[in-house]
Picture (tube, rainbow, N blue to C red):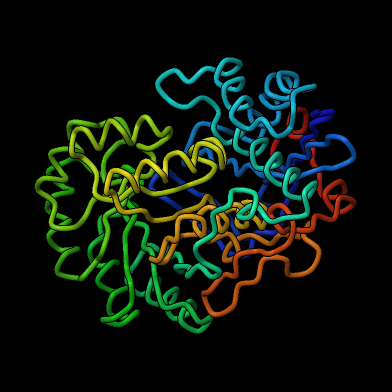
Length: 379
């Protein structure tokens, strides 16, 4: 039975600055706050993570901590920790979905911690817990975000030096979007896998025009060009785009994917653990994509190692064989993890084999790095 749920807002070192169409995600020299969750039950414990990015979604460090402490945690105390489906239903009643899924980052952190706890209690990795693990390695893409062709070319060179061969480009940041993508293609080489992410920055007509140039540059996916709820626009765009349309922010819940499939408005579904409220719902979304003939790609939220490991288990379970956007190691240091529990070398991540998520958390470091975001604010 779930006995205790604890939240820790931790200030982690930021390695590089990073921005999306909505604003800054990470700023060099300023700590990156992640909310870690510890769930304890019957002598075992597990850890999860939430990545507050107000520039991407509405949840903040403050809202995640208060939502878990005041709503989600009390609702699951005394419940069997194995009942992941039941916990998901309880969460939907406590913080209702509305148009969105309802506090997905907060829910994801607890769901992730429960998976970690169950795996540790049984002594098996999450993939074994599911009985589903089709890959032992996942290729990562190097995130490229910059304000000019020269700047992004430097970022690509940095990624190539680190051993990466695939690149994801953030667009919608400025008027030079296409020049930026062209510079990335030239710097990365003709054979490098390349996809772009607009984070909802465009309208339909502009996105159609952009897609034609992206096709000439051999971009293999155009991620979230339009606002998440523009279902009609995405249907029209998919029909007219020269590049496959991948949906991210639009797919909060598996039922969202079902809607887009019925309307013929999606080519590629992005699997993203935190966006979809955790591993339980993400597995449902991935299964639906497979059964519907929709291609799967993978992404993350600049997670530290706990979120990175959770995503690797999910993507390995479904055998996602295209490079994925799990860029946490590129921008944030996981100071709380003991040793290199998630191994990334030359742009290839090994799926963890330890129990649960496979990340060893140094709790004393977590407590040392904790900040009180409810009274002191985010550092």
